[in-house]
Image 1: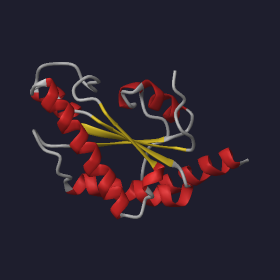
Image 2: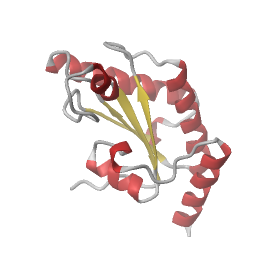
Image 3: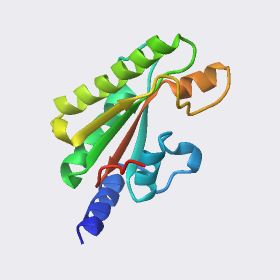
Image 4: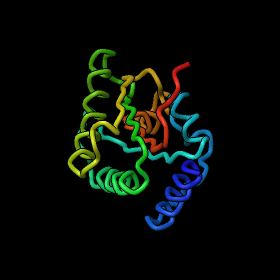
Length: 157
């Protein structure tokens, strides 16, 4: 019954927030397999993108994070943040940059009232690209933080 209530609440929030997400296509799914499973089980998925060599949140990112915080407050779900970078820099600096990106998103959510215990973060540098290729479009899609709201913690495989 709780699982139904959580899904119903998330769906209602999506409608009220003007979101059109119900089931995204596979290419619009999280890159991490465990988080992908949570989205397929009824979780909410969104992506925040970043400028080159930056971890500053732009207005669009702040809007997405505000919507995420509102949804989390009502549904009492877990927030999973997964940080990523494009492959244009060196691996150690890409890993560090993806960590700064995920922490910027986490800090913003905490500032909006999301409890730190309800936020799980991880970062991968350039190891899990959303788009393959050596072009500006692919690089732009890979500079991101993936956000998943789900009612349970991912099971480790």
